[in-house]
Image 1 (cartoon, rainbow, N blue to C red):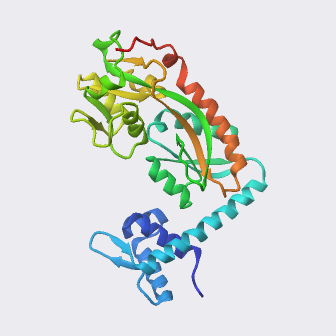
Image 2: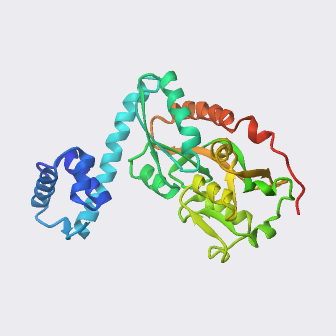
Image 3: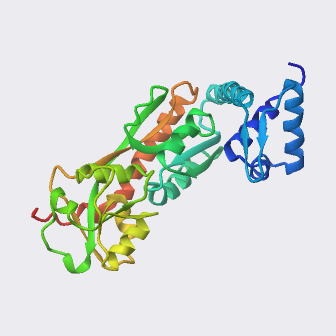
Length: 311
């Protein structure tokens, strides 16, 4: 087809992701009229509408959806050719779009970015914080190069690289320090504070407590671990957080922290990327660096927490 360019495909991809001409144009670094003109030009090439334009949002027509599917395959292949060139040069460099789940990002990401900048001066880390489902979609669609998530992901197209294992700890009111640690059955009877839907950490905590998807009446939700811990400090309930979050989240809250006796709840944090990515060897080297950072971040404070007798 004469006139079809990669730029056309990238503009269509942005419009499909944002469902809004203004936001898509901003992402692409062009004006809204310019984006609209490019999409109209693309529709003229096809001789058919690709976009349904609504008052507040847009959606793709069936033809637009099919072009998007094929276009993303092309864009991904082009990006991987760029990665192949980078891989042939040996040392890690260029852009690395790295996704991180919210229950890891605040505690691990700053040191990861700083350390990688020191180790690989030509590497530009572009981080993005999002829930697991969003990160996996970003990897599969070529909008991310790698992601730090809780394993396993079990996606055939992705390679998994384990970084470290960490336990979940119980956070409760300061007055409860020294009290027996409740069993999972006891936790089900308490007002349990958890992250909102979409967070894998929520699902892991529910699984430990053997709570079904509907949850008990006293189960409450928050948007971040910081919110949950502050609510516990206000006497609203109890919560579970990963051990790497303890030094950050409990220093400004009147709470106590205790480990569960083994086998307590835990997760494996790892790095994933597309198996077809030519930079796989470089990602394994970066993963080894992140693994060392993770061991440092979890630190001595959590390892010295007292394990109390289960109720």
